[in-house]
Length: 384
Image 1 (tube, rainbow, N blue to C red):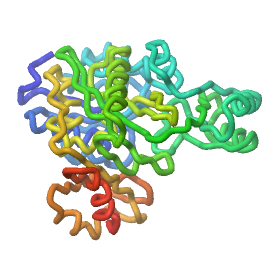
Image 2 (image 1 turned 90 degrees about the horizontal axis):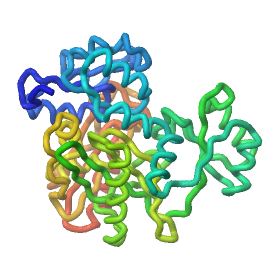
Image 3 (image 1 turned 60 degrees about the horizontal axis):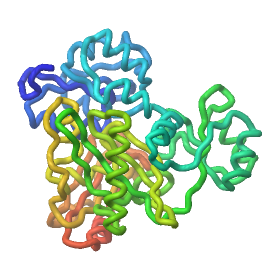
Image 4 (image 1 turned 180 degrees about the vertical axis):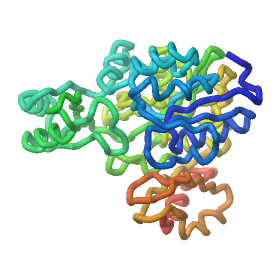
C-alpha cells in the first residue's frame, strides 16, 4: 500500500452517513483525500465534504469499480453489503478492503456472527433461525415469551427488529420482516440483565488498543445515551474488554470494531452484537479519549499504529440527539449546552429531520458520574 501519510493517498468509504463523516474528518486531518460511495438517492453528510463522490448499488460490483479504482484503501461505514460482493470488488479493482472480506464474512449477518463467536468460546445470547410458525412456537416454549425477532441482515436502530409476546404476534412480525419471502429471520431470547455494555477495539498489524467498557442506554432499540466508564465493578469492565479483544482476534479483524454485551442478573457477560465499523457507543471518544474511535478507524485500515484509547477525563457522557420535528434540519435551543464547559455538540449535516432520526450528539466530560445527569439536563430542551 502507498504511504498513507501522502497528499495523494485516498481512503474510500462504502456508506456516506455520519459515521463515515466523522472518520473522514480524521482522514482530512492526516492530509488524505476522501472518496465515498453512497447507495442512497438523497445527498448524504460525506458527499458535501469531497468531490470524489460516487453513487449506485451495494449489490453491483460494476457500480463500485470506478469508486474502488479511485481509492488506495476502502473501508466500511455499515454492514449492509455482502462479503462476496466485497471480495469480488477487491479482486476486480486491486484495492484492499478492510475489514478484509474474509473477516467480514464471519460476522456479516446475525446468525453467522453468533456461530463465529460461539466457536471461539465467547458466550452469546440464546438464538435460533426460525422458518415457520412451528419454529416460532417452539422457540417461545423453550425460551419463554416475549422474545425478539430480527432480520438476519440489515436491521438497525429498531428497523428489522420486533418484540413478540405470543404466537399471533410472532407470525405477523415474521411476515412483516420478510420471513415468508425467503429472508432469514433470527429469534433471540430475552435476557434478564442489569446493564447493556459496549467495547470498541482497534486492531491491525501493529497490534490493538481497547477502549473502556461503557454503558449504553437504550430506548425502542435505539441507543439514546452512553456512560463511560460503565458503572459496574472494574473486574467486569476488564472481562468485557478481554471478550471484545478475543472476538476481534477470532475474525482476524483489521479496523475498528464494536461489541455489545448484556450483563445478566447472574453476573454473566453475553455478547449480543458486533459491528465492523465505528459505533454509536464510541462517539464520546472524540473528546473523551486520547485517540477517538474515528481516528483509530482511519489509522487501523491504513496500516498506521493505533493510538491510545485512554480517557481524557474520569467520566464522559454522550447524549444522542434524535430528531424531534419533521422539517429541514436545524438545531434550536442549544445555547445552554454550548455554554457548558467541556460540553461538545456534533451536528451530522443531514438535510432533513424526522422524529427519532439520529441527527447529532452531545458529549460532556466530568470528574464523576453526575456528568450524565448534567448532560441529560443540558440537552433536554433541544429541538431538531
